[in-house]
Length: 430
Image (cartoon, rainbow, N blue to C red; front, side):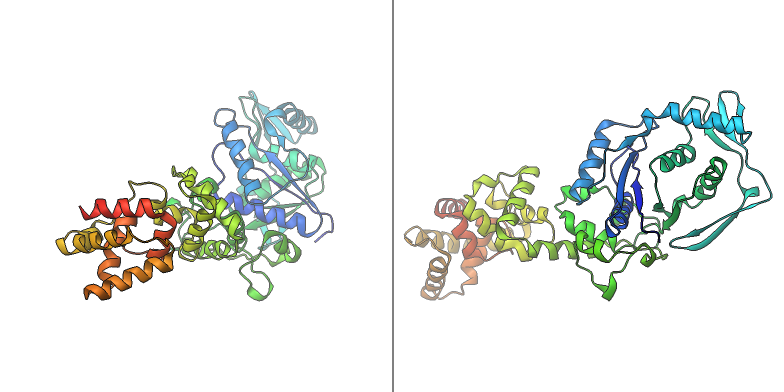
């Protein structure tokens, strides 16, 4: 591969950034940064009806969130229509293209083979008999994708084009345009598309959704980036957890796989959990607080120091940031979710409510509201009354958290504070 590497990512702002497109951006970024090259952005907004600024804003934000930066300002195809028409007219003047009404078409000569050495798949050859004359400028004056793509790649000095396998059929057509202008060809590499676990095309039911949705679910950008670059590339030694900067030091396009990769939502969750475990405590608590706010919960119901402690109680139990709020909503609101089956089992009987009332009454006189003191009181009370501690613990856990499992009950009670705990226990006992 040449030392000079200039690559591009060219999103269309007609929707959100999906996982397949994000992976394409990541591999192009790695190709540039691994060789000290340039990573450029081009906004393919020729569809003026469907292109929207809100989609573009979200795409750029998602790229930054994933950890990508780019060189220079993005160019917009919507501002280059005059250039595309001028270039099409050049081909008409050369006799390589012709007018058909308001449209301009490229004349594809039969009887030849268009071949290229794909960086991932090797030699690919196509006969021109299978390629019809190509539209350069449509009758409405807008440029065809394959044509404006070549004009811009040449203008931007693109040396390597990494994109999905769904573009393989476009490449021979684009090569014909390069040849007609006498331009040097870039190197092409086509990545196998991401498949669902069952081998079918990746779809929403497999988890093949937009980056925005993964962000909302509480996935960490480093984990999502890490997972996506493993779909088509295996680092030396088979390592799985590595950051983008680290990946850029060892990435080579030639090492990419030509085998289709399968998306595994559970593997992604596992990887995200590994990144969650590595976060510094303060940063983790801040991320949890931001996620809570996004999900309509108020993290300020806990003082900052208790917020850090609460997050730490659940760190090992969660794989995504959103799961914390689902497991620990009782810290942040009084109308928290209650497990109906557990509630009926432990608080649906006179014995359960009586045990809870007894525990609450004894707690009301406790001066030391630390978890170890609360636990000691619980176990002493159980021994005194000739009952198992579980007979007190289970009703109390349901009363204060609505859950049958989670972090340690006594740690939860300490963090919630005396007033909230006693109020919830007394209400549940009634």
